[in-house]
Amino acid sequence: MTPLDIVFIMGGLLGLFWGGNWLVEGASNIARIFKISPLIVGLTIVAVGTSMPELLVSVQAAMQDLSEIALGNVVGSNIANIGLILGLSALIMPIKVHEVMIRREIPMMIGVTILTALMMLDGEISRVDGLVLVTGFICFTALFYWLAQQERRTAAVRLQEGDIGENDDETSPKTEKLRLNREIARFVMGLIVLVLGSNWLITGATNIARALQISELVIGLTMIAIGTSLPELVTSLTAAFKKQNDIALGNIVGSNISNLLLILGTTSIIAPVPISQRFLGLELLVLLLFSLLLLPFVWNRTLKRLPAVVLLGLYIGFIVYNVFNAGTIP
Image (cartoon, rainbow, N blue to C red; front, side, top):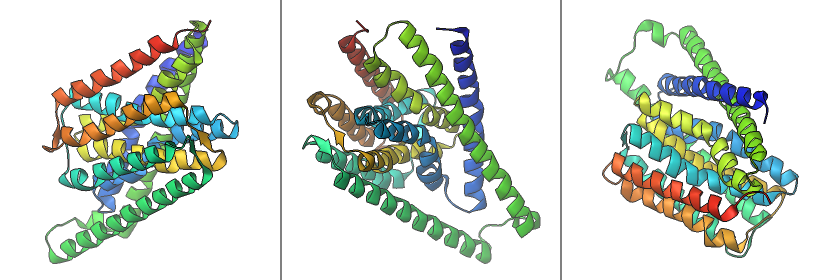
């Protein structure tokens, strides 16, 4: 452990704070410019963007023949997304849930989770399984691209009919292009700063953990999984504070879908992912539990503080169990 590790942690925290603000502001403004709902932006652009750390870590692990680390990273991140991130976000401020999210996106996330679990039962996620998952991600993206186009057409019709209005400056093509470029730059800079901040924080925390003789397994289950979920954490917390509820929840649901379809799919295409009996007995069941719990918790269209406490409590219990069963480096 060196003073540089403390610098990494402090720099990482600052990067996460500023990056999260820029990303949410840019995403919500892009949605307004394109007449697309923040929900769709949260489920697609923001979700995939904040999943970049998981993608980088998992692909790198697969290329180094460390597919189990990639699997643990993806599944651990999905568990953290629901238990830690949604739990914290709703504990600070209850999250309003769009009705379409209850009817469409959350059941879709549950379906993808169950499909992935079934693929794991034979002890491996094969390259064929990976192709199926990546194909599913392409279909998911195409669906929401189509939905975004439908929303833009609806908004254009309403504008022509006079149901909504904008001033001349805002409808000027030149002005709109300048605004769009500015918001895209804000979004991209926010994403870059988020990824850098999470990497710095992971580096500093991992070095300190190793200096304290904490085992690699515990580091993987906690720091890497939580660390690669930090962009989702900051984005959802920032969106909740700004009352951008669709981005806050859409980011998590979309990220979980992307993690399983795109990241785990890509990883298993690079190198088939072996599934241990321990994983089938614990982590997979916990992932299914968190995914299934989310639907009844938001059924009344609000994720309230009491369910948030339950999610956080279950997540803390999961981490504590793993820490006490993994021990320290001999």
